[in-house]
Image (cartoon, rainbow, N blue to C red; front, side, top):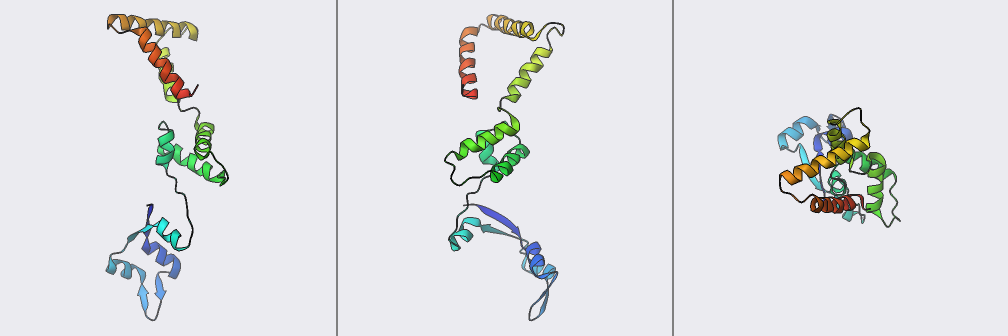
Length: 168
């Protein structure tokens, strides 16, 4: 069930003006205040069913379920773009949604890339990136030995995660 909260006062003022011309004049503010009906929940699907219509409702939560790395504003931008490109004949709606998110905001692993870049910033600024990345990995191996962790096993797990995250 998809509910939408409507501001009745604004709707009535839009429809009738501040004072409704009925068999008696009614001030909308007084009417709303007297009846304490500032807002009202409406079941959109029920309203549409009365008209023999349907609507598919998407929210930013739907987008974030597929792309949890996006903030609310980014998820909203994906929905807005998705609506512009909606094709009722499309079979792969989720794929379309994910493609739009990718086009707007990249792979979804940007945070991971950023964390690695930050870690590499601590290394020799005069060295090339490959040398610094090699040093970072060697440091991780030293850390694993010191903490009695199996680097190779953890690297295998990391590779599994990488493949799952990139669908590579």
